[in-house]
Image 1 (cartoon, rainbow, N blue to C red):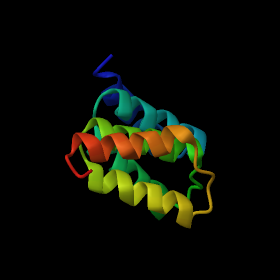
Image 2 (image 1 turned 180 degrees about the vertical axis):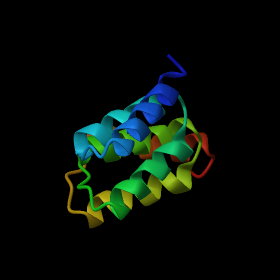
Image 3 (image 1 turned 60 degrees about the vertical axis):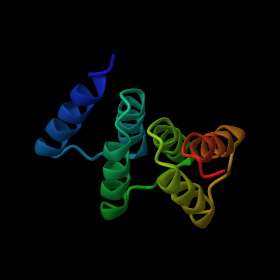
Length: 110
């Protein structure tokens, strides 16, 4: 299970090589795989790629990203993502907020 994120990233790369157009669903699946693998820095990298490629993000993408940061004790990044969710006019949900609070608690920023 922990290495599923590696396979997801390989598949994403392959899709780009054959010129398939990636969308929010494709990227969100990769974000989710990285989240489950504890790869919060890779999640942030994927969000950056989405922004550069002008791929629309959604609540699911940000929720997984915030949770990945929380699990990785990256509380600053979790809070930045929560702010980005608001800036992008996406709906906040209780999972996002709880994950951000958890990140602060785990990172002793509370």
